[in-house]
Length: 161
Image (cartoon, rainbow, N blue to C red; front, side, top):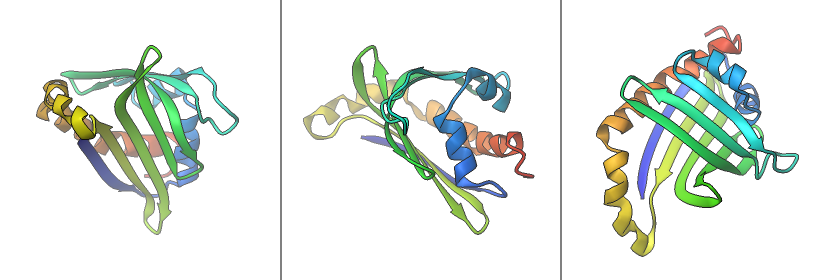
């Protein structure tokens, strides 16, 4: 299993504001968040009233050299603190997960963005092939992207960052 984690604190924001934005995505607000970098993020099929089972589509650049495009299903939605998506290809769910932990703290929102890719057990023998795609350059671009985007979101939501 490959783990990529970015943890940061965004001042003057609240977990509820970030959660609401991420659980109810629209292409318009997503591209406004970071013009030129964020392209699309919207619900393709709705799940239940709490968004469990929502299928989303996301398309974004990670700097100049990488692009991240995927469909995913919301598999965890614990308002206002946790959203987890499992990536998919068609109807096949992939061993790739993005989890956002969003918690209010004294200094603002404590955010943990975790990407988990790969298999456990015997399937982990395939992880080296996954690393061909999710290589150091991609990981570095994702880290830099995360360290910029959440402060941009706070600014978009008028959190006086």
